[in-house]
Every structure is written in C-alpha cells, then in structure tokens.
Amino acid sequence: MKLCFLLAAFGLGLAFSPVHAAESTEAPSALVWHAWSDDLFAQAKRENKFVLLDLEAVWCHWCHVMEATTYRDPRVVALLRERYLLVRVDQDSRPDLATRYEDYGWPATVIYAPDGAEIVKKQGYIEPNGMARLLQAVIDDPPPVAAQNVSTDRATADSTSLTPERRAALRTTWLGGYDEKEGGWGFSHKFLEADAVELALREAARGDTASEKRARDTLRLQRKLLDPVWGGIYQYSAGGTWDEPHFEKIISIQADDLRTYALACAQWGDPADLDTVRAIHGYVRKFLTSPDGVVYVSQDADLVPGEHSADYFSLDDAGRRARGLPRIDRHIYARENGWIISALAQLASVTGDDTYRIEAQRAASWIIAHRSLAGGGFRHDERDSAGPYLGDTLAMGRAFLSLHELTQDAAWLARATAAAQFIEAHFARGAESGFASSEATRTTLPAPRPQFEENVQLARFTAALARVTGRAEFRADAESALRWLLAPEVMERRGFYLSGALLAEEEVRTEPLHVAVVGRADDPVARALLAAALRAPTAHKLVERWARGTGRAPRGEDIYPELGKPAAFVCANGACSPPMFEVPSLNARLAKIVAAAK
Image (cartoon, rainbow, N blue to C red; front, side, top):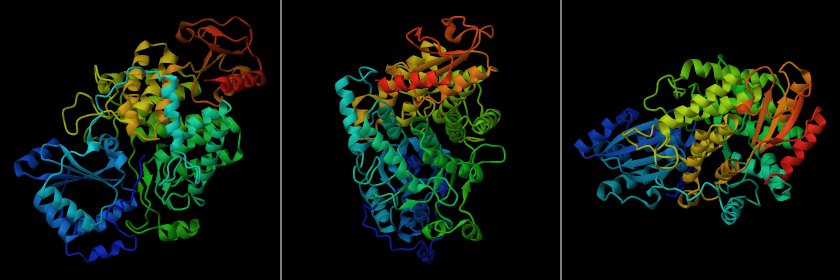
C-alpha cells in the first residue's frame, strides 16, 4: 500500500495555497538535510539531538506541499535547527526504509531518539502549527514508544498451513474489507488491491458468484482511475469514492494492474479488460520506458510541485503538452523492472502477443548487464547508499521464473535459481522465520526486519521454484516466510489486507495446476498446446515443455509415453492424465480442473 496520504489529525482544511509559503522569511536552505547513516546517530548522541526523517516520494503532491509550507515556517525551522538533525530520503531510492514505514504513507515523518529508537511516527502531511507543537512536545518530554512500535520481528506460527477454522476466519476478515456500497477493498482510499482481486478471481473460478461480482466490480471501478488521454492508472482516489483521483502514476501500480487485468482477461475473456491492458501498456511504453527498454519509476502528480493539477489533467493531449509535462523520475531500479517484466510475461502468456515477451526479455537483459551483483543478486540503482535489498533480487527472481515459464528457456530458470540462492545467503534470518528486507547480518540502523508484502512474494516465488526444480531448500524458504506471515500477531496487524498471505499459504499447501507438453519447440501442434496451457486462468500453475532427445526430463521425471506426436498431459502426484492432442480438449480439461481446485 504505497499511498501518499493527507493527515487530517490537526484539523487542517484544504483552502490554502502553497504559494503563501513564499512569504516566509526562511529560505529552504535554512535547513540542512543530511544523508542517512550511522554517523548521523553518532553525531546526534554527541550533540544530544533528535533525528527527524522526512521520508518522501518525489511524485507525491502532499510531500511537495509540506516542503513548501511546513519546512519553510519560521517556528518549525527554528526548532529543527536547534534540537534536530534532519534526513530527507526519497522512499523509492531506499527499499529498506520504504518497506519499514510504508504503512504511514508518504510523506512519513519519523522522529528518533539519539540512540536510534523510534519515538514518533506520523502519517501524511503535517501543517506548520501542528509540526511546531509536535517538535516542541518531543523536546519537552520525549514520548514513550507507541503501541504500534511493538515489534513482530520474532513472531512465528506453529504451522505453515492454516486450520480450516482459521482459514475461514481470515477469509471473513478479508471480506470485511470490501466496500459493498462503493466497491473495492478499502473505504477511505480507492485503488485496485491486486492480491485481493487475484484471490477473488481464484474463488470465482471455483464457482463463488459473490467473489466474481466483487472482482468484476473492482476491475470496472478501477477504470475510473485510467487516464483517458494518455492511459496509465492514477495511484488512488480519495474521499471514499472513485471520483477524486490523485494523479501520480507509479510503475508499481501499472505493473500490478497489467498483471491483474491479464489474469481477468484469461479467466473471462472480457474485451474491456484487454482494452485496459493496452491503455496501461501504451502509457508505460510512451512515458515511462527508457530508450534501452527499461522502465522508469513514476510521473509526478503535479505539473507545478505543490499545486493541485486537476485542471491540467482535464485537458486533452495538446492542451497538456502546451503547458509542459509533470516530472518523470528517470531512475532505473532493478525491483521496479522486475515487477514490469513479470507483468509483461503474464501479458504474453494470456494474449500470445510476442511483443510483450520481446519487451520483457530486453528489460531483463539490461538489468542483468547493469544491476547484477556477484552470486545472483541485484543492486537497486547504479550505485546504492546501502543494500543489498531483498526487493530487487526477489523481483528479478520472480521475473526470471515468469520468463522461464513463458519461453521454456533453461537459462532463465538458472537465473531464478541463482536469485533464490542469493536471497537465502543474504536475507534469511537463521533460526528465525521470515526474510529481512535488507541484509540480515547488517548491524547498521535501522536494524533489518521482515516485511509483509516481501515475504508474501518470497513464499510464492520459492514455492513455485521448488515445484519447477524439485529442490527441497526452496520449499523450506517458502515455509520459513509463511511461518512469519501466519503468526497471529503479524496477521492481526494487517487488518483486511491479508489476501497475499492467503494466496501464499494456498500455493505452498496445494499442488499447482501442472501441464506438461511433450513435443519439439518448432512443432506447431506442441506450440499451440503450450500456448493453451499458458493461458490457463490461474497464476498457481506449473507449465513445462519437453522433447525427447533434448535433455533430461523436468526433475528427472520421464513418465510420459512415447506417442510419436505432440501431446499435453495434466499431472499431479507423479501421475498424468491421458494424452490430449488438440487444444479444445486441453482447454476443456483445464477449465474443469481450475473450477474444482480447493
């Protein structure tokens, strides 16, 4: 949930303009912003000062407003200069800090004691009077650690499988987050929560008509956040409805929506879902893709930082371009490219359009050439101030596994395997369950800790990789992530945003839909059967192609009869269905199996 929020706790109305900040006698340079480092906390101890972290997003409207108002207010500036050391970090540049504080939205304001202990965490915009009161209150009497700071780092579940009773209770909690009046999961901010919709899609495929309606309604309503001029999805809508969009466009949102609409298109074949995919993809290609084929991070919500841009986004293409373009963050991060590569691979699988495969492979090749670390891992940026971070290698590992499924090229599987081994070597926490967001052995501040969404994706990635390779260590990694995710105190803190853990638990506990195509890569019938398998409407599947005489059978399981012509088999528990030689018969069997899955 990477949202940029307005915090209304101080009773601020919206009828101000950031232009008034220019009347302040203090210039922005009156504040000195430091880089995040352990040395900063050593300095804080020597000088008996607090450390204030302004964790911002370069695309975020309220971050711009806070810079233009709060951090130029004379009272705020005086208090900060007297008793605080200041750090400003673009959250996209530091995944360890972003994942640690993402539940507080952007901007997030965190105040630390000189020893690095968190003493205040605030969500969203803080107006000048409220900030001055907060800063003075901390100076007068530093508050104790708040209840939300109680750590779940050492939490662990008794089992990696939910009991039927607990699964039903968690499902009820998940459903409680669906807004029956306005649609979509969540009540104050409206956006497509990708894991929630995927879980609803999965339940709909099993015949749950209520889940089908929830998924279809959410997909329909999310189109209200589709830019009608340029394409691309705005980040969210405020006010509890779908009619107050915030106009930043972030690559994570585009990737999530591309993948989710592709899954829906595979399941229902609705042309509107395919049209949405094309509109999002067209925006990404035109605005957020570099000449080298890799993607940038985001496009700003504001044409002029701090000024609302609803009038700008109401213009047509010519009108917008006459006034200029909102800033594009042209950093190239491995994590963000991993997300988009996986989405493109999903699109290629569903549509059969080779354009998406070519784009995905081109981006993957660039990231390999420019962001690789020894041992199979990845840097975040060209140069990182810290790291390595789990998110980059995890996203690229998932991307490689997606490309392997799409192309059946063993080179991509080798890279996915190396990424998983790098994750085990650098982010596993030994006897503790879960994987840390940054290098687990690191002793710098903040101390590495597990993060919910990363452990969800890690469990799903390593469970799928274990099935492809037959290697037990990857299954153990998936179970380690699940033991932390399913701990009661971890799940309780998620509220109704727990669908990712339910998906991960199912994928570790149950066998995937497994389709094996036996036939040569250049045989048109084998290719058609493989394409049909790739279109199967679920992400929980294992698709393989093997030709006799071309190497060892997958996992050494040569269980397929010699038939003299291409055939597809649906397999489970070491046994396979009778062979299917035509796409219609394979499609019919796949639909029946998906509907019967539990």
